[in-house]
Image 1 (tube, rainbow, N blue to C red):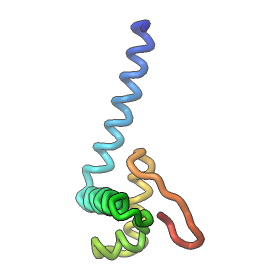
Image 2 (cartoon, rainbow, N blue to C red):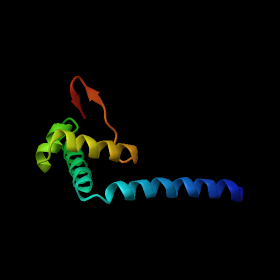
Image 3 (spheres, rainbow, N blue to C red):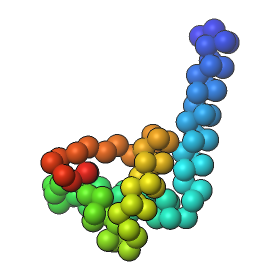
Image 4 (cartoon, rainbow, N blue to C red):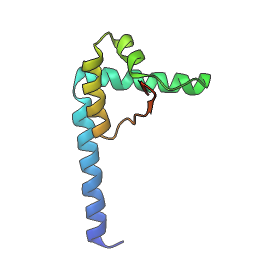
Length: 90
């Protein structure tokens, strides 16, 4: 692999890691991410649906507008993916 290509890939990897660390440096955002991760693991074991934003908000006891902001930041960092099913966001 040419040196330039290897360096570009490395720079992109560092950018992604930096964005992830920046997003997770907020204590509330880290709690949201961990709750989503744990709910996802539990859903995989139980073959249930993915956790909804409302469920995560109630587990952490924060408002929907606040969790929406934090999930947007996690999504922008590439740490979570969201999908809409009717009025529910998973």
